Amino acid sequence: MVYNESESLPTQVKILIAGGFGVGKTTFVGAASEIEPLSTEELITSASVGIDDLGGVEGKTTTTVALDFGRITIDQHGIVLYLFGTPGQRRFWFLWNELSAGALGAVVLADTRRLEDCFEAVDFFENRGIPFLVAVNEFDDAYHYEPEEVRSALELPSHVPVVLCDARDRSSAISTLRALILHLLATAPSPSA
Amino acid sequence: MTTGDDEVRPEDDAVWLDEDAGSLVRPYTVTSGRTHPTVDLDLLTLVVTVRLSPALDPEYARALELCRTPTSVAEVAGQLRLPTAVTKVLLSDLVERGVMAVQAARTAADPTDRALLEKLLDGLQRV
Image (cartoon, rainbow over all chains, first blue to last red; front, top):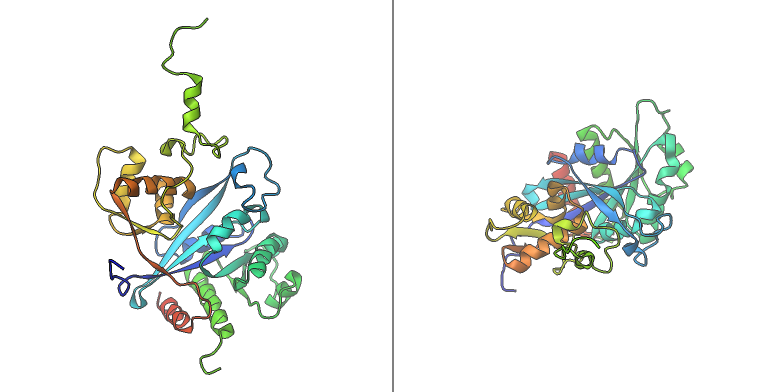
């Protein structure tokens, strides 16, 4: 290498926040992020056909899908954690393909009033072997379900954690990210094994 | 017949679009209709301004302002309020002009890397 900078380079880590529309992805990213959450739009065009399944987006149409972006810098370890949030529906999977490349893991946000909205995100991560957990965003007017009830409704395998969170609350959002890391640690082969 | 104004001919519009652009005239006008970046960039690629260049279109000038310190492509897109696909074309133009550079970065994506996970856990405990 011409530049021998690798010692000082920050390590980038990517975690994805998925779920249905209105489930609180933007709120979650905003609560956890140290910067003002940024939101941009991804273009969905017929040019994407052939890259991945765009069922439901027909013809020469142009639609956009929100992409939320946040960042947490962990200075003492030289790590920058990036959060990306976008809807998990199948018709956006072409976008998820880029997002999930190099992702450490994912949080699937669920709303108990519309649990089925997170099915496709769960499928996406399961099919690609990306570790994830399900975080139930507790809306004030939603009936309270126990995590095990949510697990059984979503037919989640027993190794996928289900946690409760309040996406508006920074410490709750951070706890959810910690739960994901703990899940990864629990499933990673132990050094003595 | 209409006037003899042949300064703007219908076929001039054609050069604004490449074959994949479809109906995307508006989002890609900042990149003159080009939809493919010439430099390989992903959302976490860090770009940094080499020198400010005043004689550029506003979006290009803003990108240079934003990237005085190394900044990810995703963050530039968010700040410019442009789709990331458009942002990539814009940034790759700047790299080609030599006024912006791609900075190497490491992406850690191994979910079984215990040392990394321990650091993340420790870091998230302190934020």
